Amino acid sequence: MEQLVEAWNTGFEHETEVKAALDAAVILVDDYIGDVVVPDAILDLCYTRVASSLFEQSAVATNTGYEQEGAPTPVNRNPMNSVYHILRGYVLPW
Image 1 (cartoon, helix red, strand yellow):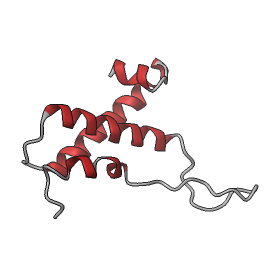
Image 2 (tube, rainbow, N blue to C red):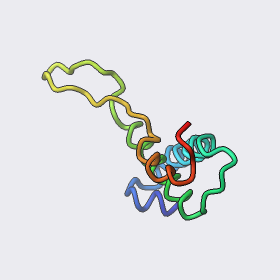
Image 3 (cartoon, one colour):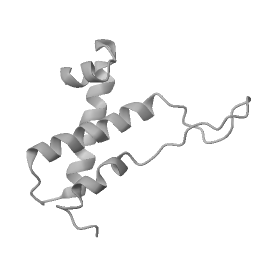
Image 4 (tube, rainbow, N blue to C red):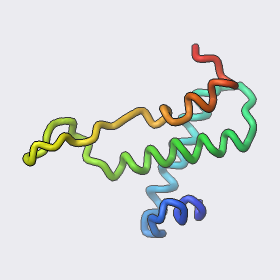
């Protein structure tokens, strides 16, 4: 946990959000892989990538329209997109 806070340079005032993102990432990855055996190093990488996506999305506007300046706002993406290709060697895609 402390390593993520330091790596993301968020400061400990965001520790609650980092923990929530990491907890959600573990749930998402574990649900996706099911009973498949995946090496711990690969799991840790996937947890970190998904948690990073979730944490970054929490700081982005959630609407999908256009702001008054005309610039489009970012659209939320599936946080698992960054790990599907990593897990492909362990988990069948169906």
